[in-house]
Image (cartoon, rainbow, N blue to C red; front, side, top):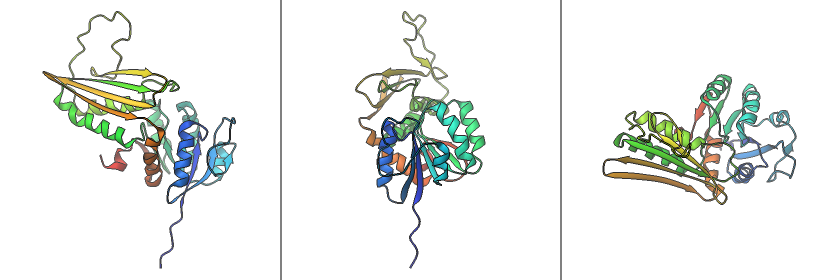
Length: 259
């Protein structure tokens, strides 16, 4: 009779934030996982769940997790992740705001373990990006509108940027913006490259939403995903923690979902 495999040990950084608290609950309930340390620089309230709280990144590393989940901000992540990489610990990162240079840096430091940066853990959002990619070669114009809660500090969202990148990889035949005058500066949104525009909305009452609008002669296609509660992200978080392996940097859940 075979022995039961050991649980994969997990640490969480940013455990007191909204996503951190939700992820803690989800990971505590997940089969095959054991949350061994929670860390947050804020000390306002005890992190969620029945797991040990530590007061430093070194304390979290000393708890010997196999995977660390990071729900902080880009600046903090870029400080923490090299130490996590040096310890040979895998990192699942739900932080947005990274640049291409940041990606190259992290790919270089994760030589003994893997770093998975996930712009959006909602599986429906991953499929939305895939659908936009599939549709792009058949349309001449494309724009992205992303909506988030008013506590999100970066714009545009990582999901919007990732969507635009996939659309640009699928097609380079995007029609130039005909607008010659903006009465209000910025009205036409930010340029994601090759004439794809991104518009960001920050508003009370929202969680995370995105529309991809594609147009060609005589028709348009609207692809929309709505996240109405953070519980939508948790299956993706658990999947990432369970399956992360290898070395180097990966961006997005696509490789885990096979899309």
